[in-house]
Length: 101
Image 1: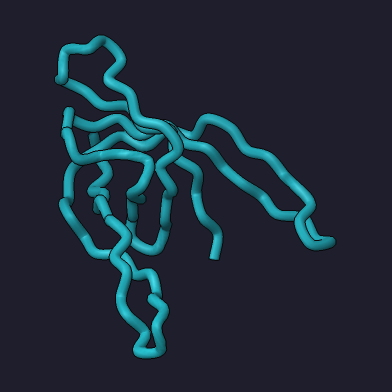
Image 2: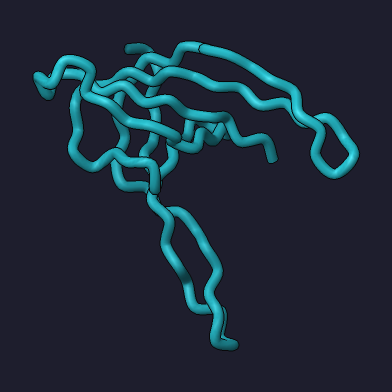
């Protein structure tokens, strides 16, 4: 586990005119392993867009779910799935998709 990742949760901030803007706040920092799983190219709005899927392995935590995201410096990863592979609450495996700005 060589990567220091940040766990971020969405926070709605009132915009003053009855709506809200979404921002993210850091909940925790931890060491994890990041492994590339697959990549794909899709056409969206008439142009190619690439997506990459990764597997993130970390020590078990109860606060990681698909509503949150992970950050590695400038890189952002949306959490798609979370699993405790052997049910022992020792390790947590997340499938994430890198978000391109």
